[in-house]
Length: 418
Figure 1 (cartoon, rainbow, N blue to C red):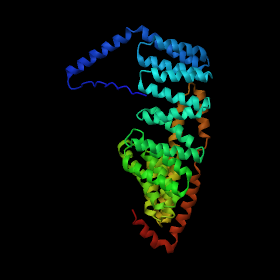
Figure 2 (cartoon, rainbow, N blue to C red):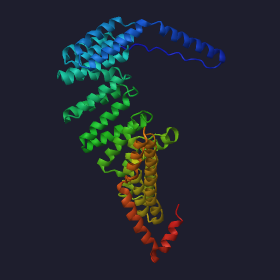
Figure 3 (cartoon, rainbow, N blue to C red):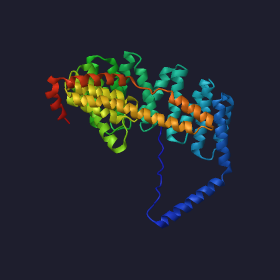
Figure 4 (cartoon, helix red, strand yellow):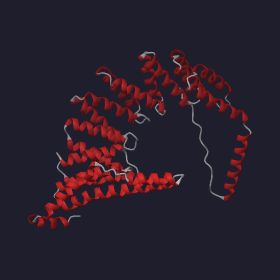
């Protein structure tokens, strides 16, 4: 598919008051122009209602109206969008051969490069899943992955090829070979990191020692050449799983530490954490408490987990985990305080809930409704997670142990710990 050149978007100057005046004047002119485009407004209104026809199941009428809207569109992108929805309406209505032909035609006639790629993607999907012409569908997806690497549709096509490769060993070997062939042809393409990752994931599914070694090698190349690309977290998590299957737990921990390192940076600069980073921290705690025997690192990652949370639901669970590691290290006073923190966290949370419920009651329309709401609230019981009962039990045990005379010396040294 030939690619069309993209248009440069001009930037607006903000250097002076004079520029600001020109910007305001331009905005007014644009607003006036929009007001003088009743034809465009009517087209957009018709497009919206035609979408509703398609959603409501009147697919044949919707397809005809989208075809008419394509001819009436004054902007090429609008015409392409209407044409795409014409194909979609036909597919929605079960007219798969017609919809396939529609997508084929759009793949050649669309003005926008991304639209042509989307049309090829959907034409392949209808052939593969709907018409059961698998070879044709695979050929279209392969063409996208090979020739349109900068288009989102190519990544979707790669996902379809990956799922196909997971069906059996012969298909898996075929797709691994194909992905590596495409990556070798252009190792700096927009999709090269995705090709390496998907090939490695298929080899992970294979599970044989030689396949796992090949997967680890591919992911090492991904770490070396694509450390700044969006797939790097998935690549590291995949290699960690491969290392676990290989029994190389030190190397597994090394990759998981790298995943957590990405959290350290993202938390400082943007206050977000990936789910994979929490999964990595939990696995590292398990490794360091068990086979790798490094309780200092285990506690470090246990302390990190509450900081990663944006929702407090798992906070009691993570605090209990932290306290258990402190006990395992012999830091009974610190463990005691952490167990108490579990109760404090839940108490603060329930207080916030109760105050919010009282506010809601106070906003009732009538005094009777308000009194009834407050009465129900007074008779309600705070919800506690199971970690509260566990914390109380362990607080009582630790307090008893720390009161025993033969533990006084240990308790004194414990107080000196940070």
